[in-house]
Image (cartoon, rainbow, N blue to C red; front, side, top):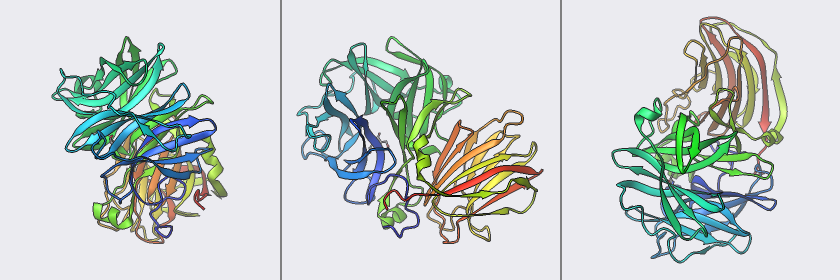
Length: 470
Ligand code: DQQ
């Protein structure tokens, strides 16, 4: 496995096989627990179990035995789908979606009495059926919190002909639940300009700076992206005033989940799905990566943003620096930096009229390169994957993040490269997470380029990042 150049080194993933959503994130004592959707039989989505890993610092992980497996004949006979973990007065408790073919989804519960290693399932589903008066598409994925001395829960769904929704339930004991109606229902007009699909998966709901934030993954025949809605929560109803993509890498940052930790931060992991053909994934023998641990914040423009936690700096090895200077329009200017597992910090002044680009994972002849491009007139940051790989098995579409810069404000980028994974954070208010699969061993160069007018490179620093599994 370690010789696979596409395999990340400083992001979490299981030793092999299929992984998708993060589940059951919880800090228990001194330990962080990350569960995840996992198929132990291969790199494809079927027969989903809950994999499990633990960490003392959210950076380095220990693999643990599988936590949940489907029970033949049970409500989860064909899969233990996504859910969350809570501390039920000292008892670790998970609430997850039991899945049965062809399409039955039932809320289930399990508890652990040995420090979150093995789990005993509650014999019955905790909700026997979805609300009968709604024509629902999906009834799955759970987030649970305490509110007014009771438990509250959201379940993701869609209402046919209307749009995505999350259904609110309340309980005193986590086992008997009362239905409290939809928290909010998506509708294209209200949520304009973000298309919110037909079904919302993996809801998460919490307060930030006095406002409430609802995070959902938008599904419509296939996963689209994750949205964040910011607004007011009152009397069991949520009224969003701002809706936007949480990460502009679209489907590559999907089904994120958060956990509040004791120092007051809210930590998020998202599933970074593959961007290559099923045949290529099966041949690799592994699929899916977790994002870096991120901290959820409100950005200075009001959007919800999740930025790498400060501890990620501990993964930095030796530093390389580049002298600042002008970037004249024309051919790319190569930087004395190489690597496939790097963090890069780039600060540049893009031309007022024109475009500035950073070339990443570039081959010396430029045949392979991923271009991160800022266009000030369009106020857009683009991650251009059209030449990321010479392979025909990979996705090539570009990602676009709206990013207006104030007059004189430089473009400040933090870029994480890790094998086939790229995470870009811009000006502490946008992120683009994606996958690239350069095919050539010499596609590890970095260059800058200006078009139209000169740009200025203010800072470029790079660090080789630690191998968390070494
Ligand atoms: N993945 C799970 C579902 C969820 C979807 C199944 C989101 O519970 O809706 O693996 O990626």
